[in-house]
Amino acid sequence: MENKIKNIAVLTSGGDSPGMNAAIRAVVRACAYYNVKCTGIYRGFQGMIENDMIEMGPRSVKNIVNRGGTVLKSARSKEFMTTKGRKKAFENLKENQVDALVIIGGDGSFKGGLTLYDEYKLPVIGIPGTIDNDIAGTSHTIGFDTALNTVVDAIDKIRDTANSHNRLFFIEVMGRDAGHIALNAGIGAGAEEILIPEENIGLEKLVESLEKSKCSGKTSSIVVIAEGDSIGKNVFELGEYVEKNMPEYDVRVSVLGHLQRGGSPSCFDRVLASRLGVKAVESLLEGKTNVMVGLLNDKVALTPLEKAVKGESGVDQELIKVSDIVSI
Image 1 (cartoon, rainbow, N blue to C red):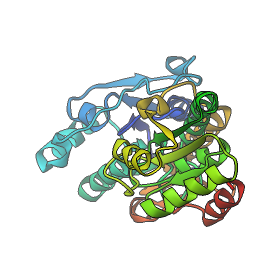
Image 2: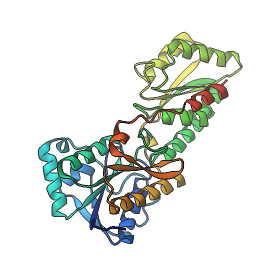
Image 3: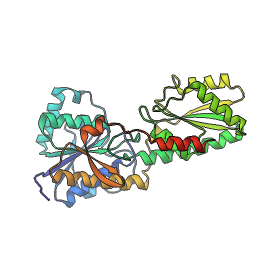
Image 4: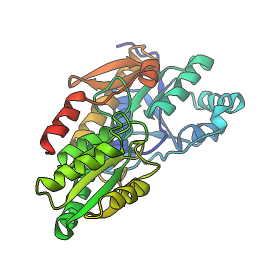
């Protein structure tokens, strides 16, 4: 394996997701395995601009594989969006003798990496870390599986109350542009309806479906809604509309919010993060750049970063059909 790269930097950027620490750990230890220096960058691109970096070794990432969040922290950086800010960031990378960069994050983070390569030819590899699972080129992003388990556990608890009081619950989950969490968690938790941005069923059809559920003998119902669904201005307005048109229902709204991002990562996310972290380092040492490491057909695969950023992740139409069948 060619080894022209002597120092690989790693950062986490954008929203945190469970498993990011496992990915950091894998990158750091893969660097040590291949006798390459590893530099950790705190607070993403903002830390790069402020020269907030530290050398990392195998022992500096001990006992983090089970921790949620990211030990390298994360931040948004408006300054990095400027030419002056990126120039300062690159100068700091040069000062720290960084030869290549591993970015753990989502499409916005990958765009930053692509810009660094375009302007300064710095080799970049992306690792998809986001609970939304909305990155093309991978079946699973780091944190998605953990978020699903968190959501299903919360819905299970809410259903106990729904059954006890014969209530209809609208449960909002994360997913501003994609309905992966809502669709998968909704099926897993036995929701009567699932509302996602990709499939706008409309208010009339929603009420019709809930009426059918009522007539079929259901005394309580769960509706899972992705935050980006356009059926109403917001989940609270939607709840008010249904309660007004279906007074027989006692309607409640629950917004799960940021608890979906936290918690100890699942075994699946820990293994996925480890596989992708190692592959990212190996790919850089093989001379590859501007690619994302992802999971396709249970195999680690490389996808051009530009395609990962611009591509459609798309919900599984089979899952939508399954949802319709099992919710009757």
